[in-house]
Image (cartoon, rainbow, N blue to C red):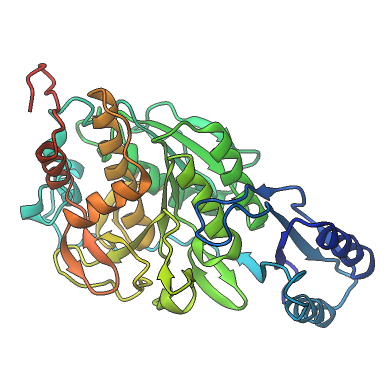
Length: 422
C-alpha cells in the first residue's frame, strides 16, 4: 500500500459497529477521513427490506505506522463475524487522468472546420448520435437541462464556453485542466463561434464540482449533489479508481459506489459513469447479484467504441454491466492548449461525455414540452432499445433521433421552435 491509499470501510450502523469503529481508531494508528457520511436505508434493495442506514468511514494510515500493519487491519476487518463484519472493506485510490493526443483522424472525418469534423453530432447514417436532427425541437438545444461534471479541474475561460456554474472548486489542478476542458466542450460548447466547437447541448446550464486524489472527496461530492440537485439533472463522472491493486475501475466497482448510485436513482438524478480505460472485464469487479437476480444501480456505464465500426476500442473496459457506448476515438472538442481545440480526444471519458449530453437533451425536450422526467431506469432502457451498432461487451450506440421518435409513438408530442407539433 502507498501512503495515498485509503482503507474504505462501510459499516452497518449499530451500537456494536460504532464501538468497534472507536476501538479501531484508538488502537490501530489510522486517521478517519470521511466519518459521518451515511447512506440512507433501503435504496430499493430487495433484501433486506428497509434495513439500517450504512455509515462510511475512510481511514488513512499514519506515516509513522507500517503498511504491513495496515494490511493486517484489512485482513482482520474482513474476517469478523458476519453480524459485525463491515459491508465492504476496500483499499482505494483515484487513478490519474491522462489526455492522449491522437491528432487528425483520417478514418473518421475529412479535414475541415471544427464544426465539420464533429461527426459524432451527425445522424445515424454518418455513425453519429442524431443530435443535429433535434436542433429544431423545443428544448433540443438543452435549454432546460442541467449537467454537472465531477472531476479534477477545467479551463473555464475557453472562448466557446458560456458562463459555468462553479459548485465546488477550492483549488486549481493544472494537470487535469485539459481533460476537464475537453469534457465540457463535448457537452456544452456554446456554438456561438462559427469557427469553434458545438456541444451536444449548447444551451444547457453547466456546473462543475472538483474532486482531488483522495477518493473520499468523490463520494462526499456526490452525496452533496444528491441533496442539492433537482430531478432530471445529469451528473457525469469521467474518473476511475484503483481498488485492491486493480486500476482503471469505474465508481460503481467500489462498495460505496453502488449505494451512492442507488441514492441518485431514487432522487431521479441521472448518473453517467465512464467505464474506464483498462481493457478489463467488469464482470469480475462489479458483482451486484442478489438472490440470483441482477440488481441494476441506475447509473449508466459507458464504454468506448470505434467511430465507424461495431467494435470496442481496445483500451475500453467491457462487460454485461456496460450499458452503452459512443465514439471512443477521434472526438473533436475544446482544449486548453495550442489553438484551443483537440482533434483526437479519446477513451471512455469522451464517450461518456457524449452520452451525458444525449441524456440531458432528452430531459430538456421533455421539460420544455411540459412532461415529467423519465426515471433513470426508463431513460437507460429507452437509449438501449433505440440504439444501433450494438457491440459485444459495451452495448449499443445511442441514437437521439430514434429515441425521440419512440417517445412520440408512445404518445408524447414535441413542439418545434415555431410552435408546430411534431
